[in-house]
Length: 302
Length: 127
Image 1: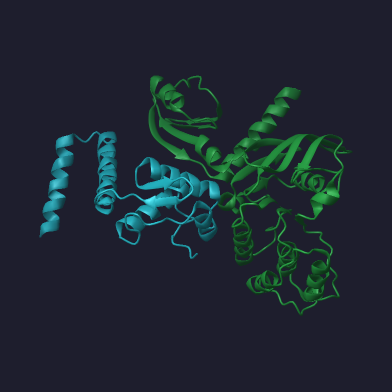
Image 2 (image 1 turned 90 degrees about the horizontal axis):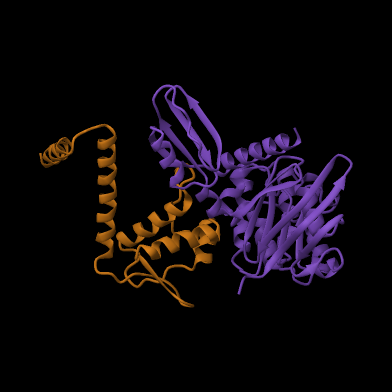
């Protein structure tokens, strides 16, 4: 039997005056972390808000923890922890006041975990939010969500603007959540490095469209850069699924998102010598995917 | 559980290969003897802060290589193959030798010359 899905979006669209979420399909298995990567303004926050039921989609189906959203969003929300940068915390109140407030609403609140998080995040419960730095405020917001132990965490750019130490603290806590295989995390970022190590699933979004969504290992496995050398005036053969070709003097490279021996055989049969087959970082793959997707859209419009 | 591995962010290789190497290292130094129960995939992922799917892939490859065995519902164990530790070290040495052969080939160095150089390096070591 396949695993239960924590999140399921099918054909979700939402039109704004100058922007459109275009038929978003997304699936997140229970017990895993998905990194949701896109440039600023790609539609990450809108997608998360649709999952929370804060925005109603024009079309498509949204299911969160088995509940239809927005119709059953009240039931779903008990088990969702949502954190974003514009979370409203009261500047004149202490972190402890906020902790008590959240505790009074959510029965799952864990005092020990909250206290441990406050220590690990280097935030003082007795201090008013006014005195918090940007990083501490972000961590305070996360603490308030994490200590409820929700089944699904929806985190909008949880690491943006954090220093390297704070970023590591936050990513470590996300991994800790996964100790329980009934819990899941979806977090957005425009920084692929944050996402690369901890994520099971990777989704790329650009200009309101999901351009790739896959498990990370398959993703990294399929993309390769092949370097080769060839005689002068080398005629590039026709290769399948190549998204970028470079040839300069006697050296060249091709990038493919579906690597197999057809690429290397094709180059060798055309007289080239393979110098190396390299894996690519998620950042390189992301940039290549976005460029290819934009070129395709422009090409189709022309 | 404490993080049993030292993983490098600047190592250019994919993370699952680093995990495979670290497991083999634990076995070859004798920290993880034959029959030793490995941490579960999820435990190891949380401890190393590497995604579950990556650790799963590393375990699968280790299983394919016969380094570990997985028993349904019981977890993964270091294989009880005879002298697994030294076999792994030999395997690693062989990989380096194969690399040397490949470089020699791409440089057009004849096999005799490669053997001669290896011998002269061995001689140099003896002194």
